[in-house]
Length: 148
Image (tube, rainbow, N blue to C red):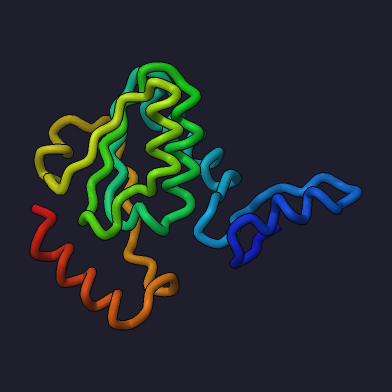
């Protein structure tokens, strides 16, 4: 099930007589994409443990980045670096989950420095559909002036 409202899949699963697969719900989660991304990481670097991933861009609203960070939190020795403007930082729910599960992560605006360390780069786009026109323009300017 794919739905524009966060939590819709969970609500549907509670009343459905058949299994519901969450294929994306609003700005919440996108677990099917996270599994595809995990497969791609395994295929490209040959492992899903012991690597450094940089999540770059719009981490606040990008549900596939949130879902992948959550999923990778279940693997061993995965270090995550979140690279974004402060206004688009990864939300606290994912960061709290990572802290609770002893997953190493840090946050920065230093894209160039992070690229020197990362085995995998997960780049997101601005995703204008989740922002008002004014917020989009403001954040676009903020990102271009802050992210080095």
